[in-house]
Image 1 (cartoon, rainbow, N blue to C red):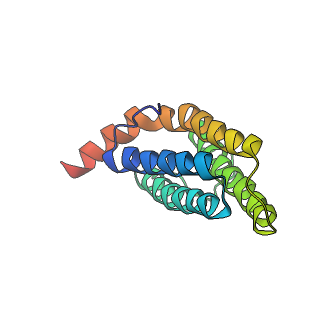
Image 2 (cartoon, rainbow, N blue to C red):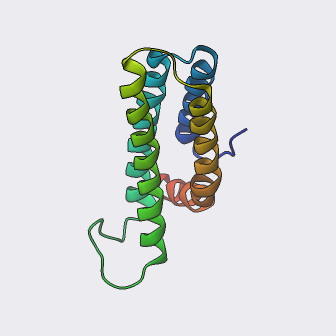
Amino acid sequence: QLPSVRVDSMDQEHEACAAALGVLSMSRSADALRAVLAAYQKHFTHEEQLLDTHLYADMSATSGTGFSAAGGQRRSHFADHKRLLVDIEKQLVIAQAGGSVPMQFVRQVAEDFEVHAKTYDDSYAEPLSRLMAGASS
């Protein structure tokens, strides 16, 4: 069970990612893995846009001077998105060559998504939902 991030669209996208992971677990097919990749890409793009608009609005994506806890969190979070996508893309190359997706990889990608959500997404739930509520007032 993934924690709510208190933003309906993000929670719905998390559910879509989890549903795609469920299909992958059952079928272990390259098509199911492509569906996970597509769900992740859609979600990560939207999430990064929301975070940059609301939570990281005061920082430049290219700012590299000085220490910024928020900047470090942003870089780490977005880098983890890239890692999750690259892992799937690499496995897709193998899966397209024939055969099913190994169960070990299926378990790992599901675990990685859950750890990502609990490590990164849970940390922005309160401030993002508060800032978005203030922006819509």
